[in-house]
Length: 113
Image 1: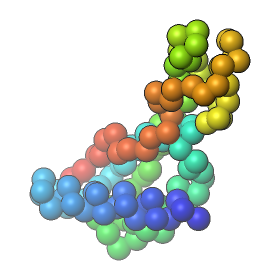
Image 2 (image 1 turned 90 degrees about the vertical axis):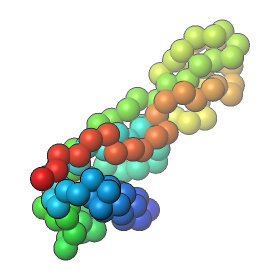
Image 3 (image 1 turned 90 degrees about the horizontal axis):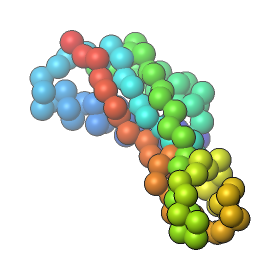
């Protein structure tokens, strides 16, 4: 389950920011996760709770913001929604497409004390 290691990275980033910005507790974490990032949101919730135990994020609420997959077709130059990383253009069938959104995962916001 790679979500566990992703959550370990998130908690490490939070701890690094806590040291720099001098906060002592995290109440809510908002993560943006792309539809094409290969991340299971249910596994993220479970893993975050487990990894955050005993840290300044212990008991914090994890909010996940879903980011749709988007791509530009180099043939017809349309921006299209992408549901799988290696799909062709739904307008003209061209392949490959230039991915512009949906494979990211980032901390968008923290609610801290």
